[in-house]
Image 1 (cartoon, one colour):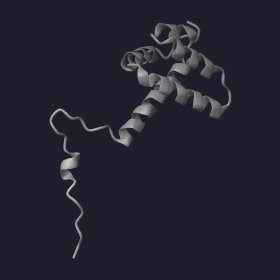
Image 2 (cartoon, rainbow, N blue to C red; image 1 turned 120 degrees about the vertical axis):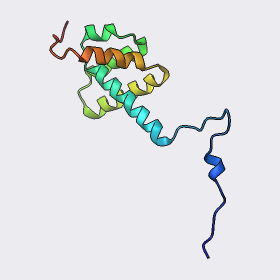
Image 3 (spheres, rainbow, N blue to C red; image 1 turned 30 degrees about the vertical axis):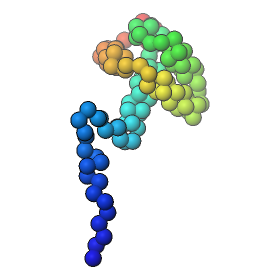
Image 4 (spheres, helix red, strand yellow; image 1 turned 90 degrees about the vertical axis):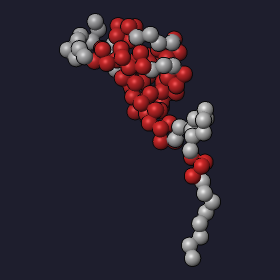
Length: 110
């Protein structure tokens, strides 16, 4: 005879007004998306970076990450930028990055 465990189906159902917490997979995907934004920010020129509304802390982290030549250290700094972006609405930043990337033939110091 096969043993049956407790019925947990009601545990996963959303009750009225209670939202289920995001899954670990969703949290990791969000973190990777923020890190991708951070990496894109590090590839911008100074003038392009000025056009994006960022906090001083994020801007300083981006400028610092540009100066790093060691792969591992740069990766850690991009993760740090991603962590800083957790507290910011990234939609306007992504919109500006997409707008800037529409002009691939731009001069680097424009």
